[in-house]
Length: 130
Image (cartoon, rainbow, N blue to C red; front, side):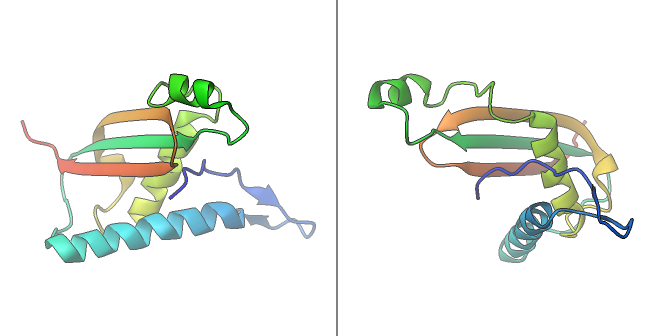
């Protein structure tokens, strides 16, 4: 999945506030993928504190030269999008998956945004152990 930042709520002409479709689709993809992995692995809902790790790999633009692609692969991606908006979309998508009750359970967070050939999102959720 290509990393998608959480979109801001929009105002319709009739005054109604709505969530952008791109945000809804991305949250649904994350939710469905987490549900599928929970079924495959027999994972149960986490009821306590959670340690969350997320790696966002942002696709290197095709317009970049091969030299520049090689130089930037696996390096920090500083100029793509806000990391906090990427994290928020993942956390909200996971709220609907059943992995936890609410993203307020996340008490430790490690997130990285790097450049890569193929865009992807890797999420690791671990019950917090003392």
